Length: 287
Length: 333
Image (cartoon, rainbow over all chains, first blue to last red; front, side):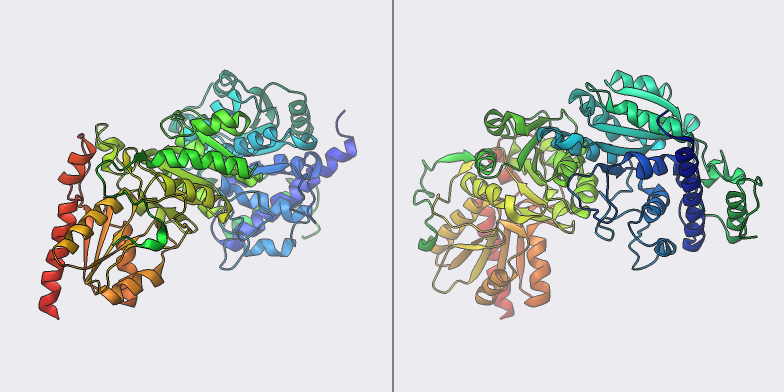
């Protein structure tokens, strides 16, 4: 086993804490996106608390792995995970989207230099990650550094995503690992209604990527996929993480209306109760 | 007379003046930059020879990336490479870079503060036979409006070479505007060059009108100045190769001494170099102006010379604009 039972439980607990932070910051902000951040909490948790080589106390550490968030609108999960990991105080999370905050509505590294990039306009992150991987390969892939790119399924409708896919395959970027949040929703509806993406795995294989499909809420499967990617030497790796949009709050799950709106105070209260009681399985200390 | 301090090409008015494409100077500059700094890398989108990335590719094959016809990807890939410590030059035609990939340049390069250099060839109607789709006449406008971006439009191949090398150490995104066609070499290796510094290339004892030119049309501005001098009109001509940051002190100084300014650029008059000059003067020293450039039209096929004449950027058009401005402003005085 890659993870011990205790590690699995700890990661699941951390992901749950991050989901609570996401709800708290969104209700305080009064705007922002809910579904994507919630459903990517498990992937972010495994990355920041197991897989990534990084140092929250020294964000500029030269040897670190790089993590590019392409679909910048899910930044609440990025910020919440970074705060949880110790990059900045968790109290700062409630400044999300407020004037003067380091936590811009879409990530801007001028405000929060620990970010690897600024993002928001869709379809641009993979290109940047490809550039990083090419540069690192030119320099001999120092110390086995890896470049991670987190992206959404909806943003694959941007043609630039496929320009980047082609180049990564051509350059055989084995130091590049991308993750698609396959939650099947976007602002206007379900992806397969808006613009069908399937067969998605075949598309990436056709561009010379190694594709792994996983349950995006199973921390063991997530960790194993990142580990498997390290063994692939001729291709970049694409992990298609099948997720449930809005995961963790039953009321929000699988409903595309939660793509781009925040919970109202009463909805947030309900969501936090559900997260704190693990869906009614335990009693919340807050009650 | 030509400013003797600038070591300009003494044969620049001759019929047999050496003609070299400005984009060629960029290619030479890439090689020099690559030799001087191992961080320099070059990216190209299927225009290696035409955009003059070939010389670099042959010398530094391991620092060259061919991305295919994908300019949006190219801009963002360059951003990622810059994040890893490289100094990337992206090379294509101006219509496609910074034309097609403008938002990628804005977000992933300028907003993201990554020191990517953008070499845009085939700017202006002098692209010629390829026609209007390939003649970028909006690129100064769309680059100078983006925060955190420098914009340079060299007047000849030698200045392009120097600008390319100088751009490496700016630490900023830089757009270098380049032209396709062979044009007169006006400067020499000895001519000083500094990003952000305008130069007086033609001087007079008591200039009555100032020309501010950018790019290869500086030559037409000089021809017009010489012709006006023969007619008894004293002119001063400035080479404004850096459009952003604007050398405001030099522009205000010229306007204060001449009281009249004609700007000359192979670009839309709207939001181009002349507009940048006007923005400066409107605030600091309102000055009567005329704008030589394309007036809200697209280009078309033809020879470079035919097109420059047709769109009103030839020597005679500059002379006429100057005389008209002198006439009008004399009435005001």
